[in-house]
Length: 508
Image (tube, rainbow, N blue to C red; front, side, top):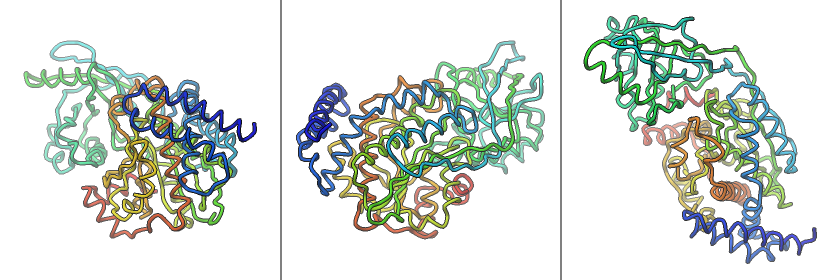
């Protein structure tokens, strides 16, 4: 296809996308305007140019014409749930590596590390025995051990304080009981790392003779879904821990106000000991400073209840499409861009942390680390994780994203995914900022499936991610310096994040 025909094709496909986006109210005034601008400028962008604005528009057009939604369908429908250490996850790594190669990237590789344990969910059951007999809806949490064969039976006790000091004072009341945790009080939303304290409580519960622990869901209709256990290391928990449906949880709470409640629970899971998993890494070498690099990543694994569409198939597709669109330019940015599909973000140890351990001697050359793990909502911009110098340096790039409505720069430092290890290392780290209302409705639930993703929003997010990665890599100077441990500590303190707990969760 010659240059003129290629421009015509771009315009035709972009026009079709504009018509679709015009029906999407959240992007009507943002992406549509930008897409029309791409159409008007496409004859110019077909000519050789070094102007950053023109280059970014070509990248955006490349993503917007791409196969984002088809890639997501392949990952979620054809491969399905991608629990770290499973055969499906291994298939996903091969699929991801092949997509990078299809895009023309070189040095595509799998970087293997070992999880302490592989794990597979088995059947679960529970029922009330006293004051009446009726079933309860439960399932095991990830990396919980099985109960003894035949299950366990005990009186239920409600616990609202999971700090070890509080539990020690209740040792007599806890022995042989089944604990249900009042998460609203034990893990308040205004304490970002409270789940880490919950994780620490499991050994205390075990030492005190508790038989099992139940965590309530927060979603109506007894919908099963993942409740964060705070377990980020792929380690088998020291006590059987399960989840109970919201309505059944409210039932047992009401019953407890009237007298003793006895229940029995059982779940049988499979564990496989040390298990190899791999990050998928690919690279576009920089044209002037190839030894310096920008990292763009998203985690490839998912929980096993749904198919991981919003969490985090959308992020994976954004990274793959960014790699393809940038490679298709035929002109690399000044610095290299490394693309990463991370392993084991959900159960841990997170693949991003293991990458840092593996590449420790190269981290001085990492200019910035970008992560996308919050679904395909309306793009808002980037979280700069508490760094005002990074926010200021990003403003010219954010201006290029305004037509997508993605020019926001948030100081929010509550990192919760693979951006965290890079923040802890003092590397300029950014997490993609999108509206998460739809994401939260399906997050870690059986409903996190392909049909919950809007294709226009997915393409828009992919365009923003690709443009940002290229713009940072193409800067004449580094976007911002690395910072030292004291500065990192100040950022975490301002965000009410405990450094020791952050290190426990995200350090290799």
